[in-house]
Length: 145
Image (tube, rainbow, N blue to C red; front, side):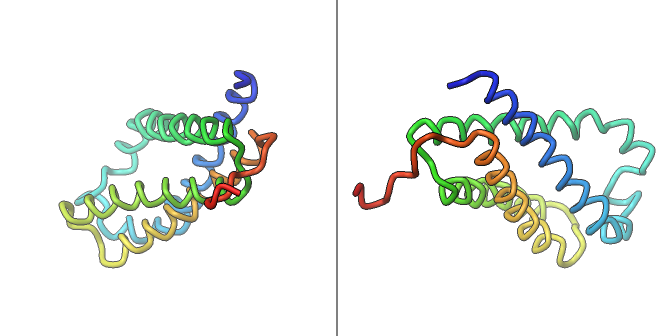
């Protein structure tokens, strides 16, 4: 493992998560969130005062994503492994989103959009990690050949 490459991959994952979160939540889903502003979500000024928690959360996800990828890359991993990691991380995110949907009065259709965007975002982050921390060996086949 190369610490400099790991740090670069971590920064790349953090930036990719932040950029895609902006596209998903501040652009695509903003109008849905606005429907329940003040009732379900914090007021915008209050939300801004809690942004450090948002960034901490993104950074923790970036660490987990990066370290999983680094471990996978040790055994050799191709682009299909990066996509697979993204799918599985997206499914983990989707599980959390489904739980939030079950316990919070979220707007109709939001869960579906969270699942779709979460899986797409995670695949993108997996691909970013593949290109930044590209392994030297190819991904082992399932059959072992």
